[in-house]
Each structure stands twice: as structure tokens, then as C-alpha cells.
Length: 268
Ligand SMILES: C[S@@+](CC[C@H](N)C(=O)[O-])C[C@H]1O[C@@H](n2cnc3c(N)ncnc32)[C@H](O)[C@@H]1O
Image (tube, rainbow, N blue to C red; front, side, top):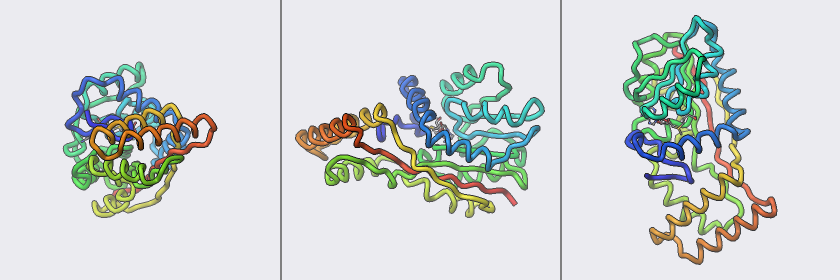
């Protein structure tokens, strides 16, 4: 399984891998980060979903935001999660329990919904895993009714801030990671993708999401081990970087963040 920043790959060709628990654990850890909680609340407010609406979470993962949408659309509305990963869909359905939700297997490139049938779409941290984000944006435009709203949220990995650690070693490791991801600088592209698909952009927001040490330490272990295995850094450089991080975490002097951007738009 390919990984980035200690995060499993969510590329569509990786949906049937056996490490489902790892994926769910990563999504649950990230959902608890205060920056993610704030960004989701901001996006929910901006999307302004109403009772009776049909609302879609594209790439719904564990389904937690579909449950939030279900509360907003009420009994008369529809809250739909679409994801290509069948195991993730089962987990989401199970977690939703009695809440009225629909989880449907599908891809951003061919949404399983009719034209102009949806009032609101949210899509979070999915575009960075897409090879063809413009095609996905055209699909969102197809399923939204005129006046329908969309919020795209995604990280932009070029904004990652690593502290402490030798910048030269970190630079080598991040350069390697940049070459593995299909759409790593997705955050900055969201506005242009929406404008290019004919949407009217209404608002744009951002949040530098700060990771906790229990997420930071596995991330450094993973990227330095891979760096050594691929000859990008030496064992001595790996040990020096890990020692710097350990010292930093012990002293409370560490920082890892990546900025998430969100763009709100509507279909004219
Ligand atoms: C990083 S997870 C984000 C999940 C959720 N949106 C969240 O923010 O917690 C990426 C999700 O995108 C889904 N995904 C990957 N490729 C996709 C595609 N082509 N179409 C729709 N979803 C896709 C994955 O299965 C996974 O559930």
C-alpha cells in the first residue's frame, strides 16, 4: 500500500486493500483535530443546507458528515454519501445507525445520481487523490440543480510546516513525497476548478490543521524509513531527524501543520 505522510493512499485503485482498520483510524484521528472540526463547521454553515434538500457528500469515508447532513435535511430530505470503497460504505452505514442516510458505491467521475437532482454537495480531502479533478467537478455541476451549492475542501501539501528538524533532510523527504501523489497541491486549485466548470465562487476559507504528536511521530517514522530504504537519506540522517523530533515532542517544542482550503460556490 502506498502511503503519504503516514496517511494510507486513498487513490481509487487502492480501495480494496486489507488494511481497512488503519484507514478508518487515520480518518477518525483527523476528524478529531480542532482545525478539521472548525473547517467542517464553517463549511456546513456556508453550504446552508435546508430541510427537504438532497445533499451529497462525495468521497464520504466514514460517513460522519453524511450524518450531519441528515440532521439538516430532516425526514423529508435525502443525505447521500458516495464512495468507491465498499468496506468504507458498510462501516459508514453501520455507524449511521437509525439516522436516515443513503450510502452508494460510486466514483467522482460518474456520480450515480441524475442530472440536476441535488441541492448541495460537499467534498472533503478527495481531490488530492484524483487523477482528473476537472472531470469530477463537471460531474458535480451535472448533478446540481441551478442555484445548487458546493463546497470543496482540500489540503495543499506544499503548505506543510515541519519543526524541529534539519531543513535539508526534510526537504529531501518532502521532494520524494511530492513525486508520489496525483494531486498533492490540490487546495490551491479548487477555486479555478470550480470557476472553470461554470460555478460562481461565493467564498473561500482556510485552516492550518495542526497535528497532534501521536500522529506526528508515526508520520516521521514512516517517511524516514522509506527515505533510507530508497537511498534518499542516510541512516545517520534518519536517526538525527527522529532524535530532533523526539526531543521536540518531549519539550513541547514541535509543530506539524498542513493548510486546508475550502471554496464555496453555486451553479448559476
Ligand atoms: C482522505 S479520505 C476523506 C474521507 C472524508 N471525505 C473525510 O474528509 O473524512 C478520501 C476518500 O475519497 C474516496 N475516493 C477516492 N477516490 C475517489 C473517487 N474517484 N471518487 C470518489 N471518492 C473517492 C476514498 O475512498 C476515501 O473515502
